[in-house]
Image (cartoon, rainbow, N blue to C red):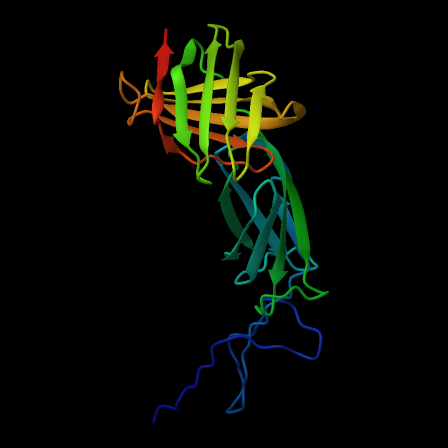
Length: 274
């Protein structure tokens, strides 16, 4: 008569020394009690790669956490929790695979900046970092995109929008890039209040990016009310020859001002690629 068999699946811990992953699969003696277990190692080290990276704004960045035990063996099935601070605030989690790796991706900011990415192995999966849970860190720099050669943007006939804060705003400017990618131009923007009145005047134009023939972005530094130096980004869309009620304008400043992407109430945006 066949003897019944019993199987136990899951994880177990031991109060005496063990070798992770080692177990006995057969027993050569007579009838006896037996217990088979595979012991999972505790995370002892977490490494983030790449440790440093530089990419253009508005692109995706991914980091991979590798979790190992104290002996350097990959640890699978561990939740890794990621946090991003700096120019971007983001967080997320992923579970390590058989190689002890978990990957996290996030989108970069619209303006140049820098981030610190931290991660820890949440061994008990309680969403709180305990002293014995290993952690790692990486840094990220966001830089200006490459300029599109021979891209030219001109705003004519007195640009006018209503900003996201409800204020009337006016703007003007021009920007162009040479065949070699050298940039020149100037930009002006005025929020007429009352929510947040300000005058913005460009110090320089550092990058110009044409997105086809109907959209473009301008990057540089500007003064606000005649003072300081703040990074700016202007994005425009040339959707008609007339401009009004069709073309669009958006300005974002390092000081947190954001006009929102607005339809023109006056003026005209012209984008040319020579």
